[in-house]
Length: 473
View 1 (cartoon, rainbow, N blue to C red):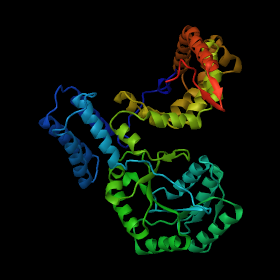
View 2: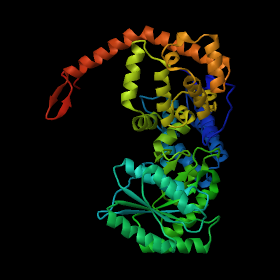
View 3: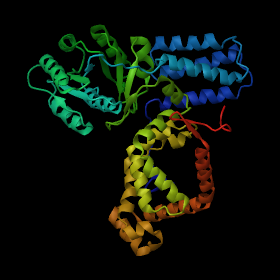
View 4: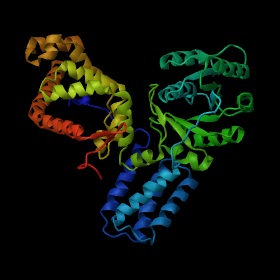
C-alpha cells in the first residue's frame, strides 16, 4: 500500500495527549519484562517509576497515590498467576487498576419512558460546548434516535448561528429565539414534544471563568427542564483546571457525567486520569478531533490499553464498520486479487480512508507500532497530494499506468502542484503493490473459496445460522 507520507517532503513530529505518558509506560514495562524474578524491591522500583510518570502527566497527586497503593497491594507478596510470568502479572494489575481510575465501565445511557430524553450541556466558554452539542446529536442519530437541538446560549455572539450550521451538517433541527435562555429551553422542550423528537439537547451559555451569574443561569434552565442527564463539557487541555471546574459545576448542578473535548491536543492528559476519582462523575463521551464524526463513548479499558502501549483495536474496528463502505472494500479486494487494481480504484480507497479520520489517530490504535511511526505527522494534505496526482491523470492513465512516459509525468506534476519525483515515487510504489498482489492473488483466491465453502456447510435452523458439526464447540 502506498504510504501517505511517501510523497513529498519529510514529515514533522508532534506530541498528542498521552504520547509522553505512553512512552514512559512502554519503557517501564519493557524493563519489567526483562526481569526474571520480581520481589518487593523490584515492584517498588516499578511503582516509583509509575508515580513519576503519572505526576509528570499532571495527574492529581491524591489519584496517583491511591493508584500506586492499589497496585502495590495486589503485587507485593501476592501469589502470582501460574499462567502468567511475574512481569505479565504486574502489567495485568497495572492495566486493571488504571482502568478503574479512569472509571471502570463505559457510561450507560438510558432513555426517558416519556420522550423526549432531555440532555443539558454546561461548561465554560471555549470548552467546545456548542460543537459537542452537534456531535452528541449525531451520536444519538447513530443510535437510531431523533434528536433536537436547543440553542440557549444567547450571550456569545454567533453561538446560535454556529449551532444552526452544525445542526444542518449533522441533519438535526435547531430551535432558538431572541428571548431569554430559560424561555428558549422551555419552548424547545414543548416543540420537541410537538414534532415527536425523542431527545432534546440544550446548549447553554458559558463564561471565561466560573461566576455567580453563570451558575444562576444554568441552574434556572435545569430547574425549568428537569433534565434526564446533565453533562459538563470540559477542555482536556486545561489540565487540573478542568478537574477544578468539574468540581464547581458538580456542586451546583449534580452532574451525571463529563464530556471531555480536545483529547487529541498536546496537553499531558492529567484531566482524563483524574476527573472520575476527584469529582466522582464518569467521563461519558470524548471528542477526539474537529470533525463532527470525531466523537464517541468513552471506554476506560481501551484508553488504559492505549496508555500502556497496547493499542485499541476494538475502537479501530468499530470506526471502520461505521465509516468504511463494505461494498467498496469487497470490490477493491476482488480487483486486487485479479491483478486489475488501478489508480482509479486506489483513489476510491483513499476517499474511504479519509472518512475514518486522521491517520495519526488510527496508527495510535494499533498495538506494537514503533514510536517513530506513531509520532510521524501524517496529515490530510499528505493524502491530498496523492489525490491531486491521481486526479491530474487522464482516465486512460489511471487505468493503465504503462502510458505514463516522461512528458505525461511532467504534465501530471505541473497539474497537481507536485514534482516529477513525487509522481515517479507514487507510480513506482503502485507498481510494486500490483506486482505483489498478482503473486498473492491465487493464494487469496483459495482462501476466499475456502471461506465460501465453509459458509455453504453451515446449516440454518430457526432463522439462526448454526455451525456445522466440524466447527461446533
